[in-house]
Image 1 (cartoon, rainbow, N blue to C red):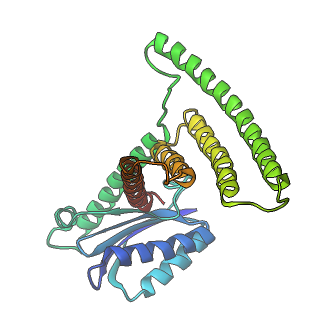
Image 2: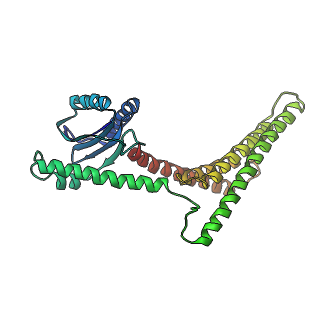
Image 3: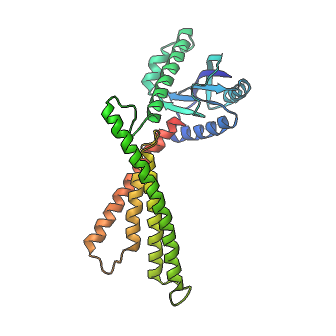
Length: 289
């Protein structure tokens, strides 16, 4: 296995959309041939690290050199390695500021000292990103290695309580499924047989959504036992589903208009929040994949 690093000059400034398209293709191709690495872009230049089987890296680099979207391709490092620096990412990505590239390259981009500088920058940025990703992986809601012995004991007790809640919620989910079957059976058997009125359909919808909300709550509970997830999106999604259930089963003929308006405001607020969370998450995944 080898690691190959290079720097190149883009023929034109890349937009965010062009970078996304480039990354999508690179990640698909790299995953197919067991290549991992990272790509830096800034000041209309690329720096990339490729690591994987020697033949696969060599073949990929030949394709890169033929790509008309960049030129002045210079190899910074090509060396055998035993372990990958980016084992979890087919192509991680980091967009650098123009100042970072300008201060790095200086006035003589072909000089040996600049090539060494580029290599040092890649190592520094790679280590920084690796540390950030490792911190995200180590995120724990209830850490068992807390420095305070009392807090450690309390965290163990709470984690046990969470496990008990997860078991109880599983029972509730299966009980809810049985209730859905029973509700459908009653509605279908009531005269006229095998015909559902609008109110019957709303009742069935309410039973289905109750089970789905229970499943979402179960996932929320189990997230507290994981160390790689911050469950903001799921909590918001659960709240959105719960209020959506209310909207479906509401009888608007008997409700006052302020209640309807307030419900709409809550749905809109949760929808915007969920969209913002997805937007931020998309940018983060763009860096980490």
